[in-house]
Length: 420
Image 1: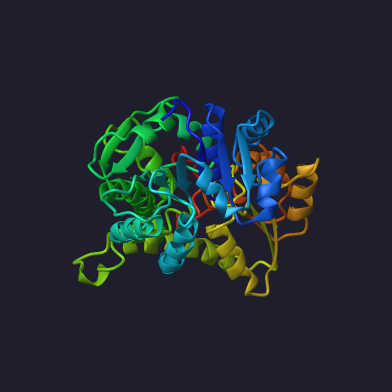
Image 2: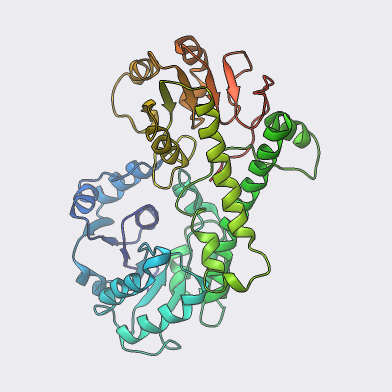
């Protein structure tokens, strides 16, 4: 194989396109294949079809240099040395995922390398590999197949593609030349394991994060009952104590944390003596419900919700707890207004912030975006009623009521954590 490999990436979403752009920037010739013509057209114009720091510039540069292109033609996979798969695989649609994947494989030959970057249940890894091999026309043991799960945090994809350790699953758990070529220009040494272990590692990454946030939210639920300020208690517990790194309580969402833990156990969960993954998700969901209840206790006629995304400084609303909060509030007679400043493409976000808060009885700081933190004084001056602070982000005062304190304590904590 040449030092620079031609690669075709199936799927131009949040995993596929950043990977493709980084590979193209490293000198590889990369083609993205996606069924969405609008996405393909956007990439071919040199623009990113979604927000991800650094991605728009990287796509623009690599498209202009001829290193990156995009198409809707499935047959384009036959022209590559390496075929990377980043298709989405919802838990209840694995059969559909396999059908779509094997449809692409009719254009793949046994001489090509197939790299799977899709997150899958560990229990279906062997099945997917076998069905891909059958579609390609070879056996699973002879199929040049690599399991290369993504481990990226949305908002840091470009940076982490270049720096994080790479978990690589191969047939024998040993080094694999094609993937080595793709990783040569990136930091973060690869760790080689078998296929199942590679996917297992990816899943425990997110199961662990979800559980960490869950314990913080469980503390907040207990503190709320006891009339203790959970935010302050956690901040003091962490302060200069080497055995604590407790996250800040807050809403927890995103596509990965709400899905990946179940991929470890879903087929035999009823046989387990305990299901920590289910309990962790229940604790995180309970904190979201606590936010709703605290708002309803104030009996507002109208509310301004600040932020709609699932994570600080990102606009992505998929699997966002705030979207769920807004939906529940709208089921009442409350008039709900909201603003997501990270995604707003207009000149004067401050004017929109003012119009959103204007005439509302309550303000809900649902996502602690930097934009809101930097405008704390403005928000407090605009608010006609109490501010319900989900994250403990604002300075204490009679106008700020923080979730997870029972009596809405007024002591400001030191913030840690980022719940996704």
